[in-house]
Image (cartoon, rainbow, N blue to C red; front, side):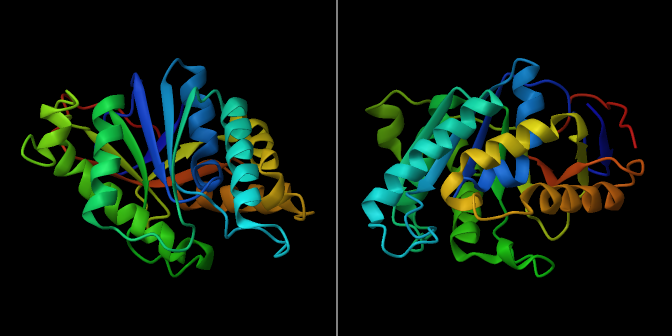
Length: 256
């Protein structure tokens, strides 16, 4: 796998990845290519989806409860396409997400159970370059996930019931990969995984069936990100800001 950028290494194989996102389909749009490649290499990936997605339909006549069930099924189908074995849904109200202590505790619970070495989260910042990334649920999810990853999940005094009643020991997650960051510093070549990413997105039928130009739109955005990262002409890339919460063990050569 080819990486380019200025973020600190390592970017090698990890055993477990946790993706924390606001809505069904968020992670597949922003990181589906990476996930396809990671699972193919043997990494176990878990999705944590915070809302029920019931505000995301094109047809207002569909009841919210019905759409929520549809979107959960679509997310599980998309996860299957990408080799993701576990999808956890909190089922919170779509469009009403807030980054409070209760949400941070629920995210911390999943972090301590999964014990990932790498987390994918949405940015708590506004990315003015791409309006769909400005959804308030996305930013709330990013803010709550970041606080849960640092310091909550590693702090034994945070939510002591998780340790004392549930046996969930503190967990340090060394890498945080921020999707939709206004300051990406790492680009991953996903050219060879594009077909699987697209198939996962098509599994979200309620969100993508009406998009006749879906493949071209996604390919164009990935091509632009590859160019921004300095990858060769014609390559496709997903972009991240990578944050190290622990010092890197040793330098690892990066390929640009």
